[in-house]
Image (cartoon, rainbow, N blue to C red):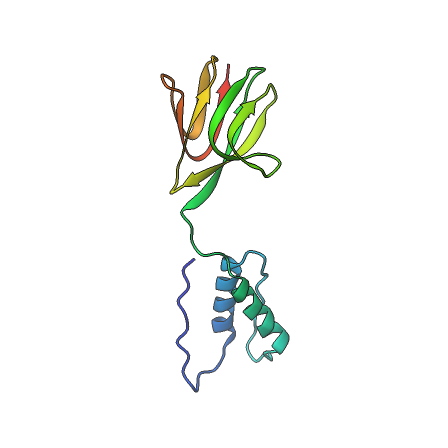
Length: 151
């Protein structure tokens, strides 16, 4: 988000452009807020300003060193165990995932752009997307959406 705050002066006119810039910035900060599109000469009501104020108060949590990536696993009727920071399909946080025989999708929790983990399997592993795999040790580094395929 790149928002430059308005430096209001005592005799400034509140324009639609200035208000829409603020609305857009608040909408980017708080994804649950739907920005209002102002037009020149529109009456500024308490309801509209209170909605904007409430969205600012709820905020967006600011920036974070944490992000997520989608990890798709194609086990091809093979088993494996994954280690790392994941959120499973039930929105539960786990560090140990048992891969059954069906395809599955997990959310990797990355710190400063990466999640370090491991795969424990006696099967061939191939990876694609934003992941590196060390076949000698089973180590993985996930830096974005990726797919892990067992064969």
